[in-house]
Amino acid sequence: MRDLLLAHPQRSAGAILLLFGLLSTFYNAYLPLHGDEAYYWVWSHRLQSGYFDHAPLLAWLIALSNLISESTWGVRLWAVLGMSGAGWYLYALTCKLSNPATALTALFIYLSVAMVHVGFTIITPDAALVLFWSMALFYGYRALFENHTPSFWLLGVALGLMMLGKYSAILFVFFLLLFALLKRRDLLADRRVYGVALIALLIVSPMLWWNYRHEWISFLFQLQHGSAKATGVDFGRFLEYFGGQFGLFSPLFGLWLFYLLAKQRAYFSDERRFYLALSALTPLLFFGYKSLFSVLELNYTAPAYLGATVLLALHVKGHERLFKIALGIALAMSLTLRVLLLSHLEVVQERMYGYEAAIELLHSHAEADDAYYGDHLTTAALLSYYLPNHPSARVGISSRMSQYDLWYPNPPQQKGLFLGKKPLEKALLEHFTSVALIDTLSVKKGLDGHKTFYIYRVAP
Image (cartoon, rainbow, N blue to C red; front, top):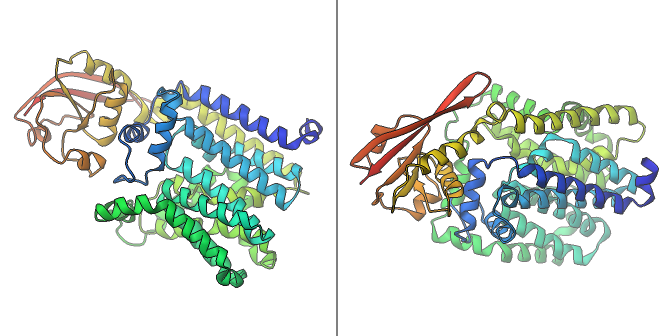
């Protein structure tokens, strides 16, 4: 098999990514949407140059995939394309640093870990971030180490698109600046570097203009997101963050990687490997520091493992047995997760379980001219996605601020149906004069628990 793959390594890499992408697309058709995914899909039908919660690129990409299909696999199409594209750039970057055999090793590592399997499955802003971070790593390498002028301009494009994808892309800029200060101060006098900045700025200018017109509301939300409940330094939160990294990148690959990152001083003089290590350390250390003060989502550190994958592949030679064991563990974890998502969704990700049935029950009570309301932004989005003809829906009670508050600044003015996950008569009476519970649906939650959906008829 090894000889067959290495006979035409570039074709092998393309075939592996194509097969993985096709299987993921087929798999995604059988998994209901997460509320966040439905929220981004709603955005794709109301295109803007900015949104309260995130940068706008994901909505634009989903709008393109809507032209092909708006089924669950269609909504997630850019998750597959983005993660596949990232894999190709990592393969190409490893070829630059080593040889096709090592590049295939990097691709196998990338496709084995849980972080990537989840990325192929759930559409989030990370899809664009991971794609363009990998693209920027590749063209950044060519610009810095091969002095390839067109790569400077492509780096600017990648940086701009990355920042249109997710605000945490700014960490790539910090990484490049830090690398230049530590290793390549000559770059600060290179006019092409300022061309890179200009290209990136032009690409993100629509998003900046939207934020300016909305008093920087999206930037402020992201700065505060995850930190509002911080109560001081908590090393327990840091240990939870650190432990979670071994789930993202698998236990043995994670240990191996952190060992390599810890010994960077041993080859600090190797600029190329230091480039990879710093691309991983910048987000890991930044979010590690932030984890001392607030609870973080594990996916925040996903970009760190792109350069880290290449770095790890470069150290596999001479440790082939360890690599095979680590690869087997990573694949076993990822495939188990995929199986459990299909067979025990109520246990693995209960927030995705039961909504389709609850919305079908709600629709059975629908009357002419009904409006639709949810108890949260994700509920409202799922109502729009799963109800026939995809009607508009909105949040019907006081909830955390979201894009819905910008679209619907005034109180509800129409009768309709409300879906919630707990009794909410008191909260509903703050916005409606008539509130009546008309149905409930109890579904499984966890191993032996349950959750109940509540359907109300409301009128202003």
